[in-house]
Image 1 (cartoon, helix red, strand yellow):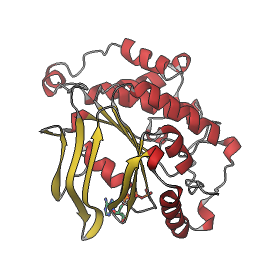
Image 2 (cartoon, protein in one colour):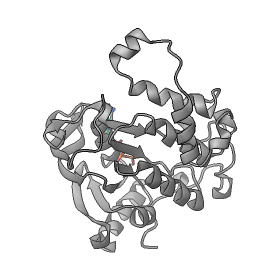
Image 3 (cartoon, protein in one colour):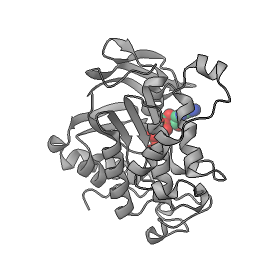
Image 4 (cartoon, helix red, strand yellow):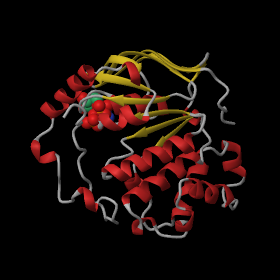
Length: 276
Ligand SMILES: Nc1ncnc2c1ncn2[C@@H]1O[C@H](COP(=O)(O)OP(=O)(O)OP(=O)(O)O)[C@@H](O)[C@H]1O
C-alpha cells in the first residue's frame, strides 16, 4: 500500500552519496513541505539528478536519511517522471501508461495475479487529464515531444505516490511547449509534492514555489522563489555556461521543430538564460 498525501514534510538529513570517491551530493539537508513545488537548479554535474535518484530509491545514500515525517522514504512513495524518450515506442500511449500501474501493485498481487488484465479506465482518465486522451491508441513514436512528455507524466501518476520527482521534463521542448508541460505537471500533481530538476531558471522562477540551488553536491541556497535573488541564479548560470561547450546549445533540431515527432534525436539543454 502506498502512503497518501497525509504527511507534513519530506526531509533530507545530512545525505551524502559518492561514486567511487567522486561526490554526487554531500551532506544535503533539505526540508520540503507536503505539496510544495520545488525546482532544483545548478550547473551540470552539480548533483541534481543524484538528489532525485536518492529520493526515488534508485541509489542509496552512503550516509544520512530521507524521510516522510518520521518514516524512511520508500521507493513506492516516489513516482519518477522519466523523460518522454524512455517510453516504449512500439506501444500505444495507453499501454505505456498502464506500465506505471505495475510499480504500485503489491508484491502479492504481482505473485497471484501476474496476468490479470488491468483496468484501463484510470489510465485513460489520466491521459485525459494531461490533455491527450484522444491519443490513447496512438503509438508513442508518432507523438510529438510534448505529447510524449505528457504520456510520461500520466505513466508516473499511475503510481499514486505522494511525491513526484521529474528530471528535466522540458528537455527537448520549445519555450511554449515547456510552459504548457510544466502547467500540466503542476495541475496533475495536485496536492502531491513535486521536485523538478530544471536548467532553465526562467521556468523555475515562473512555475515553482521554492528554488534549491546546488553546486558541487552541496545546497548553495534554498529559498521561496520570491526571495531568491537574481545574483544567486546568475552565479549558477555562469557556472553552467562555463561548463557548457558552445556546441551543446543546438544540435540538429531547431526549437520550432521540437514539438514535431522525432525518432531518437536528443538535444542538449539550453543553458539558463535568466539574467540575459
Ligand atoms: N552512476 C554514477 N557513477 C559515477 N558517477 C556518477 C554517477 N551518477 C552521478 N555521478 C557523478 O556525480 C556527480 C553529480 O552527477 P549528477 O548527474 O547528479 O549531476 P547533475 O547536476 O544532474 O548534472 P547534469 O545537469 O549534467 O545532468 C557528477 O560528478 C557525476 O559524474
